[in-house]
Length: 177
Length: 308
Ligand code: SF4
Ligand code: SF4
Ligand code: SF4
Image 1 (cartoon, rainbow over the protein chains, first blue to last red):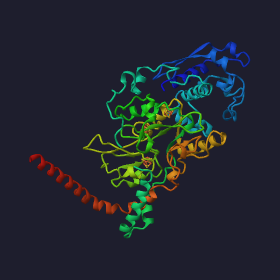
Image 2: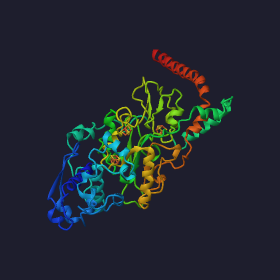
Image 3: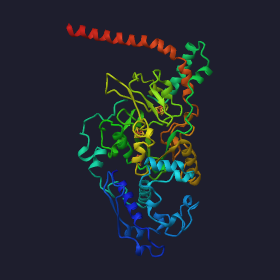
Image 4: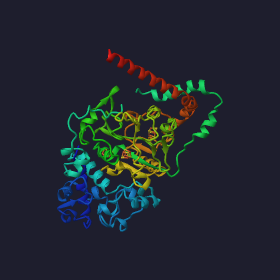
């Protein structure tokens, strides 16, 4: 099941780079490929083929929720954010924090009375849910390493590859029961 | 361990205990002494099962954060999902794994459902109230932690926990202790940071925040997408409420959750069970001495055999 993370990161990268697109000419103006690497830790960056995805997506809003100057399509966001306000950027990162789990971000979320902000996904979750959600529905690749290769640090935490437990080292029970 | 026995054990214990220990202890007095009601600003985790993809990154992150021993299989090995223990049940938490992801093939659901299991950090934890040496503590942040230097390894909490969470460490025969998820209290929660598994999850299946906010959020998610969820936040009321709560698109009883626990904390059985504690404290030393003598006698007999 190694490949899922990758997929999501790839999509995220795509989103980061597509901010200046106009609604009508998005396919022409979008970037060809995007390197999604700001969150890379246990996996390599995702090289996201934006051009290919613009060809299969029915509209920009499928991934971006909105295009520049237009209101977001997500009803949660549209409650307050109308065209021309926060929706000015289409970069994922402008709404989905890449430090969602830092003490600072958590304090900010705690201090915000809006319930939907408390439930708003961070950048990692936004990437993965968007990419994997669509890939699952459309039959795209869903393995973690289909989109990003796990690195040595990743192999270590997963106890995989050269860090795999020796076969037969245990009876297969965790003990305790 | 069969399904019924923890609660029925406690209830039975209660009945038996009541007979023996009804001696002058009124229920009210016990309730007053052992009221752990939830802390108002405690933290919690809302787990949206509809988003989990079964990647087990959470298990890997927990293993690292809690310095747990090497797993039997790699964390990317999906064969663990097919492992079955007694009674055909999927794997559960162990002394080596404070969290495990289970897979359920639900008829009519297009994809399998994955479910992450760990301690639910009950508002009124049965493990805590059942522990007669007071090894457990519910912190104001919401975590249920324990002091391993106090634990005597009697395993009463294993029996008391309605979710079958505490595991018993056999690997250290000299100091056998209970082991379980502590909501990353020592390394994260007490510094205001979310648990390692929450942070590691690529899908952000888990939302960390004040329990009372998470409850509102959970109900809003259900009302926003009534077709995507069953109308039940598991852990809102079960056994008096838990810090970890769950949203699902499949009825909870179809995916291994006990939906017959009721809304009363197990503590209320245990409270009465606790009526037995003075008796337990009185008779246990005698019991242990008995066991000790018995095993010594066995050893002595063995030695005799060996000699002859
Ligand atoms: S890391 Fe998240 S998505 Fe992966 S198995 Fe754990 S809870 Fe599910
Ligand atoms: S789930 Fe079990 S171990 Fe965890 S706090 Fe509740 S009773 Fe205790
Ligand atoms: S909260 Fe911490 S100890 Fe508990 S399962 Fe998650 S990582 Fe492990």
